[in-house]
Picture (cartoon, rainbow, N blue to C red):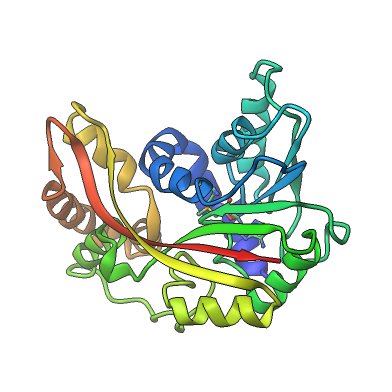
Length: 283
Ligand SMILES: C[S@@+](CC[C@H](N)C(=O)[O-])C[C@H]1O[C@@H](n2cnc3c(N)ncnc32)[C@H](O)[C@@H]1O
């Protein structure tokens, strides 16, 4: 089955971690997500799609920017993340436009042709086995000339939120097999030329890819140990430690703690410089 590994991960350990640490992750990622939303002119949009909507936080941000007679659909493959998203919507007042969440693989022809007039994604489009085919399907579901905007990570070396814990863990643990360049995962779209080619081949036009540098911060005033107990359960280093020899886990965690201390101060909490691509195009 297409995307089998990612669907398993997002319904398993990775999805559970995003649900457990939803508040911390939303605090870290809200800023760049809003910067991406700013790229979309939503004034006359009647039905927007949020791809890889996860726990639904930015689906709500999208709904807040639409008129009440519009509609937003969030699509994701992760049942546990969508359960949190649906719960958040159930606890909302009725002053937003209708929001619905569907559990489907966005790379498949799951929506009618020419259905949406804006498509958005915050870190939700880097997990397709065949990204060109996925974006071809996404374009087919969009009205002609309607806007797409998504945000994705630049290379791990430019994102210490991922690279610092990983380098520290690797001082203790054997290195895993490196994924092939562009393999599905958070850094699949690190190469902006590749992203451009994928969107071009999928039939998009007016493609613009802009670098965004932003500081991600969380936990102002919180003790280091409290933040560390969450951060050690997030991202590729967490997965590496989870799969490692049990006798090495504690030393690996200690190495990661030492590295993360360098990104902490009591007043601002944990803070990381981060580099993204803001991508816009027209169907
Ligand atoms: C890094 S998370 C981002 C979640 C959310 N957009 C956010 O920023 O909080 C990636 C999301 O993409 C979803 N995803 C991965 N592959 C997908 C696919 N083929 N179709 C739809 N969603 C997918 C995952 O389940 C996960 O919720």
